[in-house]
Image 1 (cartoon, rainbow, N blue to C red):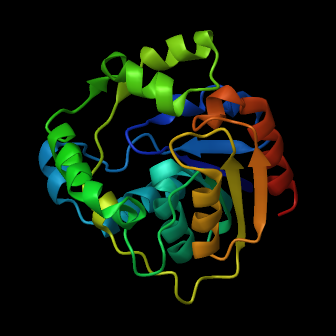
Image 2 (image 1 turned 180 degrees about the vertical axis):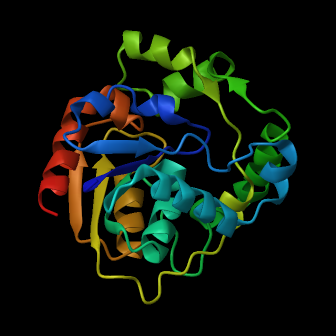
Length: 240
């Protein structure tokens, strides 16, 4: 079927975040709506990271795509990066304001030491619910994630649900040794207040990404700046 995109949403997000972007892409795009095939409380607590990659691989096989640009947003950056390492169909990896830990580190290591325990406690607590209405998280999203988002787009976001993450996404130790020589692009969201420009540049350096592209966007760039993001992704796809 040729080439196309595999889109992996960030922590707590689902395929709804790509709604504005999808019609703007020139190639087929497949979304991974959740990190695990069966999103149960037990699986969120006990799932192994390898099983997340297995599920993503299953989605890829079912897509029929042969050449893939994998796109990882935020906390899904390490998922996209590890997937690109093991799946030969991935020809280019794109990271959107993504958390890419240092080699041998975890996503938790990206946070100050004093709040790492609180992060784990929060994720475990969230895991008790299959979904959480975004309306309950409105203040956090308006302040930190959607600071450049229009009111119309904000209303759309607040109609959605937040999906608690598997704990292993935070605790998995990444391995960037012997990384394949595929294309790698990091799109920095310069108006993102959840992760600074300097932090994003550091994440890109952890995976030795030389292709840095700067977008004047908040954290939810696929919604607030869908046209600009689509333009970048289409250019990348056309160069394969």
